[in-house]
Image (cartoon, rainbow, N blue to C red; front, side, top):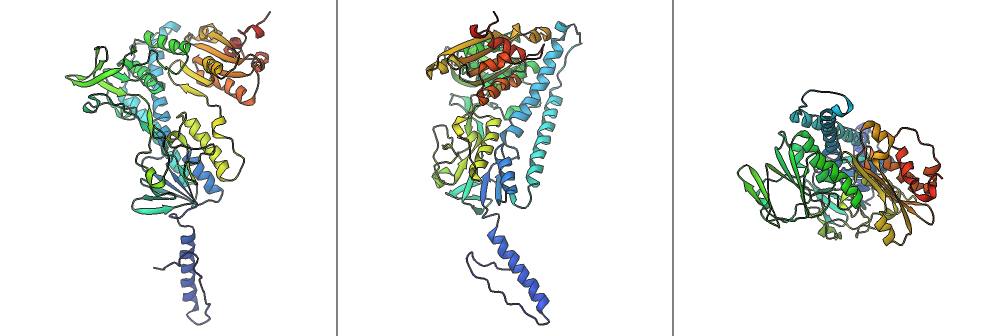
Amino acid sequence: MCEPPERGENVTVTFLTSAAGAARRVLIRQRSQCYGAVMSSPTNPDLIIIGTGQAGVPLATRLAAAGKRVTVFERGNAGGTCVNIGCTPTKTLVASARAAHVARTAERLGVHVGEVKVDFAAVMARKDGMVQRWRAGVEKHLAGAGERLNLVRGHARFVSAHAVEANGQRYEAAQIVINVGARPAVPDIAGLSDVPYLTSSSLLELRELPPRLLILGAGYIACEMGQMFRRFGAEVTLIAPSQRVLPRETPEVSEALAGVFRAEHIQLALGQAVASVARAHDGVQVTLKDGTKLAGSHLLVATGRRANSADLGCDAADLKLDEHGQLLVDERYQTSQKGVFAVGDCTPGPQFTHVSWDDHRVLFDVLTGKQARPRSQRLVPYTVFTDPQVAGVGLSEQKAREQGFEVEVATLPFGNVARAIETDETAGVIQVVVDAKTERILGAFIVGADAGELIHVFSTAMNSGASARTLVDAEFVHPTFAEGLQTAVMKLPRYALS
C-alpha cells in the first residue's frame, strides 16, 4: 500500500539504471498514480451534488463532460420525485384511468362495449414497469458520464459549510449543489397520527383498489388522484376548507373542473376545515368543524409538499431556510452560504419538474461563467393532469390589475371550439389576459382537452414578446383544438371581424 504525499508536499524521484531499475520504475509509477488520486479524489472533487433529481442529474453529467470532477449523492432511487413518485407513475396511472373512462362513455360516440373492468393490480404493475424503465435510464445516463462523475449511494449531511458526510466518510468541495426535492406535508389534525393515512407516495404502493377514498385537499395532487381513483371504480370525496377546487385558479377555471367532477360523481366537501380524524370499524372517519362526519375505507392526505431539508444538516452549514423549510436562494441559486447552491423543489417557488430542469440550465451557466438568466424572470407554465386538463401561464386578470396593468380579458367556452364539439370533449374554458396598451399577452388559462399542449402557444408567444395580434394574424389548421385559442383572442373587440 503506497502512502500518498500531503497536498503541497514536494516529491523527489531518482531514476536508477541498475538491474533493479525496472522494478523501481513500477514502484515510482504506483506512487505517481496514488498521488494523482489524492489531487482528484472523489472525496475532494471540484463539485458535490446532493440528489439525483431533474436538476442534479443533467447538471452533474454536463459538468463532468466540461472537465469537472463531480461527486453525486443519492440516498434512495435515482431519478428524484419525478421518476419515482411523481410525474412518471402518476401520469402512467392517469392514462389507465382515462382509458377506463373513454371505454365506459364510448356509447356517446356510437361505440358499444361490454362491461368495463379495471384490473387494478395490472394497472399498478404497468406503472411499476414504467418507473423501472425511466429509473434505469437515469442510472445509465449517470454511468455513461465516465470517471469524472462519482455516484455515492448514501445520505449526505452537511458537517460544515463546504463539507458533507455520508456512510461515515467526509467529502469536501468548494462548490456544493443541493437538489434534495420535497416530500408530502402532513397537517396537524387531531387524531391523524393514529390512523393509517396515505400520502401521494404511499398511495402508489397499493395493490387493491380502495372502495371509499377520502382525500384531504383540493389542489393539483388531490384533484388528479381523486379523478383517477374514481375512474378506477372507487367512491371519492374531496375535503378542503377552500370554497373551490384548485383555489389558486380563477373562479371560472375552478368551476369548469368542478362541473366535470360532479358529473363523474366525485363528492365535494368544500368550505369546511377538518376538526378530527379517527379510526372506524371499516376504515376511517373524518369530522368537519360543523360536525359533519364522513366515512371512508382509506384516507389520502394531499395538502401540499415540504422541502427535504430537515435532515440535511443545514445548521452545520449555516444555511438559511424559510418558514416552509425551503432553502433561500438568490437570483443565481446561491444560498446564504457562498459556494453552496440549491435547485428544484427544495427552494421557494413552483414545484414542477420542468422548473427543476430549467434550474439546471441556468445554474450550469452560472457555474461555468456564462451569462445566465435571472431566476425570478422566467415564465413558468403549468398543467394539472385532470381530464380535462387545466393549464396556465402568466398573470390572471386580478393579479394583472394589482400590478397596475390596464387589461382586456377574452373568454371562450371550450365547447365553442369545433374540434371539441366533434370529439364530444366540450368541457372547459379559455381565458386570455391582454395588456390594453401594448397588446402583449399577460396571461392565459385553459381548461380543456390537451390544455397542457395548447398552453405552449401562449408561453412561447409571451417569451418572444409577441403581441396578441400575432395569434390573430396566424393561420391555424382547422379543425384543431389550437384554433380555439385564436377564436378566443378574437373575442376582444379590437380583433373581432367586422
